[in-house]
Image (cartoon, rainbow, N blue to C red; front, side):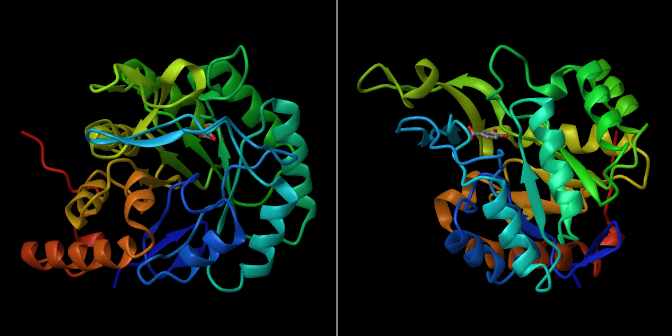
Length: 308
Ligand code: DHB
């Protein structure tokens, strides 16, 4: 009963991991792939080659969520491309890429275009590791420029991972860019960038990289995530589907993402804390919430947020 469709792919369940969590190795990916309640998975954002990432501690629990500065540790595109090609018959899968330059992103997309992978690609325009530049998606001209080049040759289903926006005009501006391209989906939100968490015992920052600055996720980001899902659903072409990400801890949180217009919902921080058993719990809780409200299918309430 909990199904979705993106770019012609049928998802038998609407939950998946958020990129970066439980998706670095084939062992982790297999656990998400086979987890009851999970309808798909996304691989750790890939660069062309292996990266070790930042020194530890680089992800930690903090009050109301998590903070991280991983530094894009990953096994390189070939590793994840091989994985999704091997497993693509099981269910529709997402391959995430996050080049540090436009050149790297275009090269990876050329490789994927030429490969046997038939699933969905999530182009991460919200990667905080691009030296000397803001996240691509915070630069609307740069976002238009890369998508223009991508769609000159890339013909497989493609979506973008977005950072949170905090200004109504920015919602308008990013939607105006995205609506000019045949995107299959957007995924919103990535972590809220460059926050600081402080340990009250030691007066120290909580992660080692970047003087303690890192992206935050979990409960604390849920209102920002819901705002971004809602704002984009109200602005994007209906053909562009939405993956809602941010602050999902309970079935009620999944339900609220769908109320705001999400088609799929992904789980990052709380998947890291709880493990892949979270998907079945969230599914059970979502079904209970729907029953309470008298809904039998997602279409009964998707986007149906009430305003005053
Ligand atoms: C990393 C963090 C992100 O939020 C992202 O989108 C990509 C990579 C990282 O630090 O590994």
